[in-house]
Amino acid sequence: MAEIFEYAPAPESRSVVSLRENYGLFVDGGFAPAESGETLTSLNPADESMLATVASAGPADVDRAVTAARLAQENVWGPMGGVERGKYLFRIARILQERSRELAVLESMDNGKPVKETRDVDLPLVAAHFFYHAGWADKLHHAGLGTDPRPLGVAAQVVPWNFPLLMLAWKIAPALATGNTVVLKPAETTPLTALVFAEICQEADLPPGVVNIVTGAGETGRALVEHPGVDKVAFTGSTAVGRGIARAVAGTDKRLTLELGGKGANIVHDDAALDQAVEGIVSGIFFNQGHVCCAGSRLLVQESIADELLARLKERMTRIRVGDPLDKNTDLGAINSADQLRRIREATDSGEAEGAERWSPDCDLPSEGYWFAPTLLTGVGQSHRVAREEVFGPVLSVLTFRTPEEAVAKANNTPYGLSAGVWTEKGSRMLWTAERLRAGVIWSNTFNKFDPTSPFGGYKESGYGREGGRHGLEAYLG
Ligand code: NAP
Ligand code: MG
Image 1 (cartoon, rainbow, N blue to C red):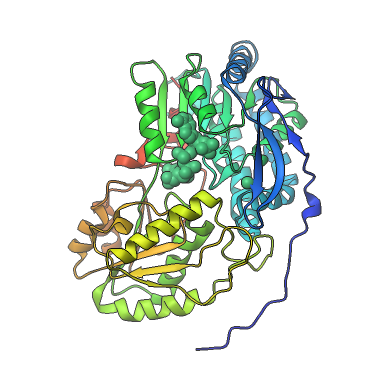
Image 2 (cartoon, rainbow, N blue to C red):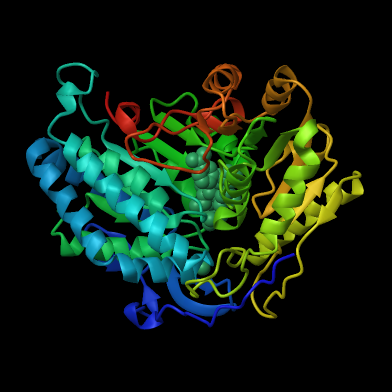
């Protein structure tokens, strides 16, 4: 094996981030503590240090936020008209770009993901979502949704911790462009970039009440989605919580979109360009520590090339740099929380217990913080838990197939249907496979690529509704 040379440390400076010690809830244009005075603490998962304390919103705070959003929607934001709304969204998009380095560093600190990714993926996409939807604000009558599409009213939005600011952008940008106002709850472990976003709304002079941010844990999310004053619920998170929300919303006139879990198949046919496929497999499962709903977490490789492909994949995995998320050379950062680390360990152990073979490259994991080495599980059977359930970590389950028909059958043998990948040199085989896969997003000869113009969403237990593109506007218009 070729020698792996060391890089000198290249840490990104934390001084671009000016964190306050405490953050209140952002309601009606200002920050205020929770009525109960309760707070939560957000940690840096790379070293377990405390970053800041945030308010924990209870039902009375949620009620205040929904009321502010209602008044703003009826009196200001709804009647304003698309041209003016678009100007605000363009302004927010530009400020996000101006403050992108600060936000990229803060996201990395609060979440544990490598700054290389927050800088080159999360933040550019966050700004792109605001620019894209700013462009739609005055053209909604051209969206194919009728000549006079109307906003729904107040949107309750709940997002997870894996892409905190990006999921906020996916939720808030289309809602505002279509004339709705929002109350958003970030995840308990990653609330900080949402609170800086609140500051950006102030900086952009966004009218009070148009965007409200209520921090807190799951109970805050429950109070928000169950509040009778919201017209629309948009949730991204686990299938289990999504099911509970669907139940709570059933029988009301609230509209609902759910973006849930996945167990994406990444199919490598025998004619694929192997080195290119190896890069796609690595980015498919190790991007963002595998905390990705559309991760390519099931590798389906044609049997005739399996040995060769796995040898190259292992060689490539020895070069994944695990460590300080703020180092610009880091490929794999920290696991977001102690709870998530425990779940990943438990799921991976179950794979071994059910007969899979486990392999990781040698890597020194830091002694503090939450870490998990990139891991391969080979010899996985379709009934194994690691082939059926989301691990949501840097763990790849490997299965093989002999014929294209078998690949499709195995890929579709899942309760989920969010994403899939197809690696082949032949356009006809690519289209043949893609036509038969039941997944909302299918990449070919690439993986984990996102664009605000492209609708994203799932089949089956991966949820319903689409975010992004023209289809995503539909979820906010009546
Ligand atoms: P989660 O436990 O479902 O949490 C998601 C959000 O819901 C968090 O803000 C959470 O608050 C809140 N929440 C918890 N219980 C709630 C309740 N009863 N009512 C309302 N809100 C509640 O999911 P997670 O573990 O944080 O996130 C990982 C999951 O998200 C994975 O399954 C992943 O596949 C999925 N995901 C899907 C997409 C997609 O687009 N399809 C994108 C990203 C992630 P706390 O954080 O305080 O618990
Ligand atoms: Mg945190």
